[in-house]
Length: 215
Image (cartoon, rainbow, N blue to C red; front, top):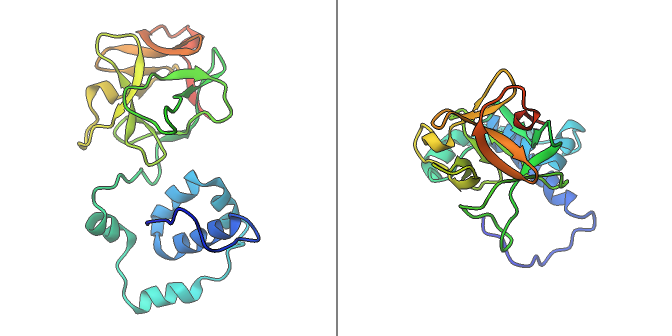
């Protein structure tokens, strides 16, 4: 969708009017993919749960009457270049370190994220939302194709463009162990919080600084 820089309309009830209309759209057109939308938009999810988006039965009947194609067809045929998150990812949310009580975070530069930025660990309320994908990626989930990346030969961890193939790049594959560690198989090292930094270090199951969980 192409948005205007400034809307000619006023919204007496604020942005909730727009969100309500987005919920109506999702309920009519997005099929199972609407779960992705609700996962990333908590206000929309709340409107859906409260069933306060109005009756969409006529719109659904019109879609059926016109024999419109499903949303999967749209993604594959009209917008194949877009990244589609897993409908039901293995894990998602903020990734918190148990030892330091901080969350995985990357500070934006110039109001946006870029590849090569170092990953930190802090307790900002606005810490980013990540998803653990079926490709074993830890992916920044804002429609941005950036993944947690183990820089070869370095202790630091950064964000880089996600590998476009069906299988994650070795530097971007992560395994959550039974001891709540996050290991990069290609290096054999684990993610750890060290002060405000996030590093790769030798795996030690007793180290709280290597314990991570999605919250």
